[in-house]
Image (cartoon, rainbow, N blue to C red; front, side, top):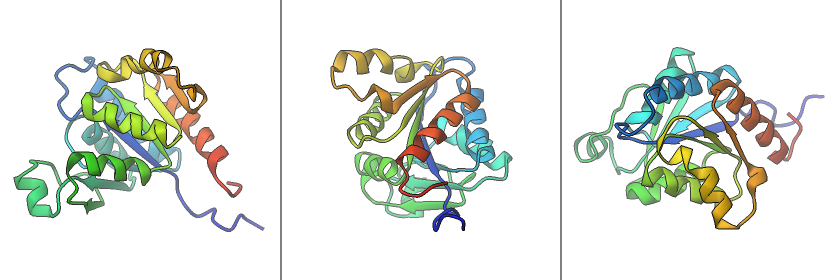
Length: 191
């Protein structure tokens, strides 16, 4: 008999820089591949419904015919586009929170089974620390620049443990594989 909830897909969040001028030259392509791999390995992509790295992950996911959920800081589609100047394309569903960036970040990470970091700035660091405190599985796509390439040092200097919940890899395919294995260990049912 199959497990009772085996139909549920894993939800993997890609967190990264909305503005990518400081990212590694190949960061966007690597993040696009990250989105593809999330779908090809059987999961759903969750993003902050924003530009930059998360947007490129969404492009990769849609190119692989995947399902993409966006969690917006805005309270409506109009505010999402006009006030926040965020895109609507490459997502199947956008949830409008009305909570601004900091509230959105909390919902984004909590709604996901795991968080994967690519490049990143201060908002990405915020999403990382929320996921870290919530003991979520975290993947870091190293070699993409920004905060992603600093996280291992930050974790070591924080003296908080939990390194077992964080995996690092420069290969999007391997990183997603590692994350899915971590998610499986967190689930209450066999998958």
